[in-house]
Image (cartoon, rainbow, N blue to C red; front, side, top):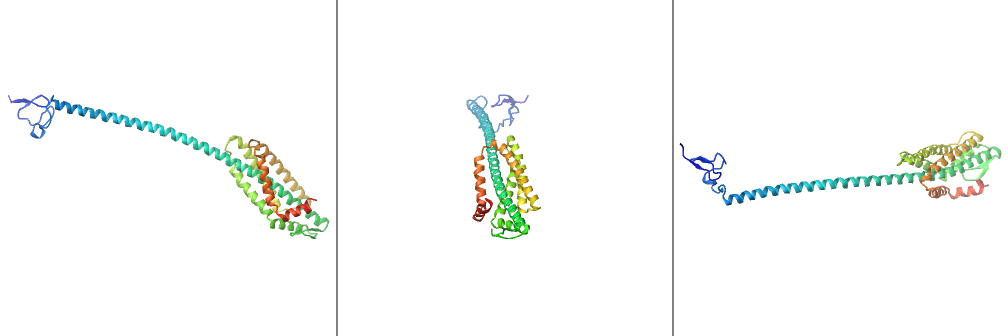
Length: 279
């Protein structure tokens, strides 16, 4: 029977010449002499230390995982709050822009209505004067002999072109078109009827401006047509005013329309209105 001995580390019986324990797999050479024998106080202290280290690592992992979860949840709610806050701000801004466009559209519409009536009425008077009285006002606001109604209209068109009035009509018309397009998508459902009314009103404004820039027909058809067009525009403006009740900015609209209109009236035009058209 081969000679045996006990492993100094695990206590199991092993061959006396063994260099490595087959049970605990510890080398039994001089290089491993620093390892503490099983059950020794030193080994127990080392095992306890390793055990505490493992527990500490697990606790640290749990704490870090918990903190990551807390920060993740906090970030989610913070991000959700910021998203809602931005959405509310965007909505508020879109309503503000919508209202600003509505005010500008309605104010410019009133200015178009007033200035176009002035021009239409002047065309009509000068046209009729050339036919019946054989005199008319030329592009310099001087009354001269004339029995050509085409020339009479051309003179007045040149006068208003020179005074910038026709450019004002073009400018207002283009600006209204742009703003109506921007208000096509209402920010809230309650503004949708107003958005539709603005589009209908612009259609009539465009007709009026085009006819101011290019009058045609006989004296009677011209007179009838511009009256019908202005009446239709008045009707659409009234519908806008009804839909405008929710915005409650009529005083601002009125002030702006007056400002735009008087800005378009030059001193020469004002003198002409006082002396001739106001009679």
